[in-house]
Length: 230
Image (tube, rainbow, N blue to C red; front, side, top):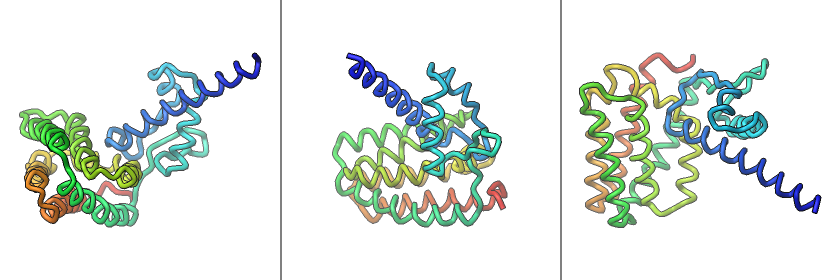
């Protein structure tokens, strides 16, 4: 009996740790945490209704993923990214996410297309709002991209892309949250529209080109913003 109770306890700790990891990972991928932002482990635990142990476990996993940095004083922050790291991640994203968009155009179902179109509409409405909500815009941008990647029907590919966004997601804040960005200028909206049209028409090369153009333009803005670490 004691052994059985002990096993139940271990499962609960793993479950809570996995939940905290998933929540923090989702915020990083969605770009809802900014580079250099510090996290209070106590606040995370309080908001998720857990003890400190699963939060520490989740932070350790995310630090191993290079998605969080544990500082010498044991505080935790979202890593800063320098220009060289950003260029490297962008090159990899262009190859992998471009391929995913091309595969999505060929493999998508009508249900996939409906989800992609719905996410495009959410982003478009936010981009055209008189006072856009930047948090919603960041989330809609992420959801649109991942609806495309899911439509490729290649879970391993999606997992690889999630790993890339885990590191680059916070930096994408610089594209969507700064006044005068592509959100206000409508560039992201135009690229998304071409991406949707290509996927609707099962135009693989066109989908890849639209996705690549979207990433390249966002990357150029971020690189020129002066906000990457030197």
